[in-house]
Length: 56
Image (cartoon, rainbow, N blue to C red; front, top):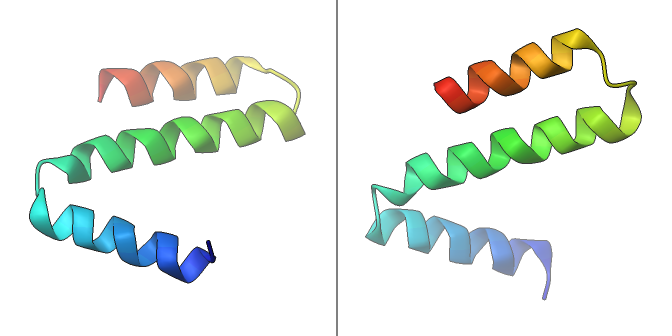
């Protein structure tokens, strides 16, 4: 599956399920934290970012 197909499926899913946008945003935030964790040392700022994201 190409990235364009996956992106299209996500757009259709979001269009049919407006409340799912919150879930997608949370997933993207978690993915960003994972990327930061892998490419940067685990500093106190990452912990604070994680807490701020989960508390919303």
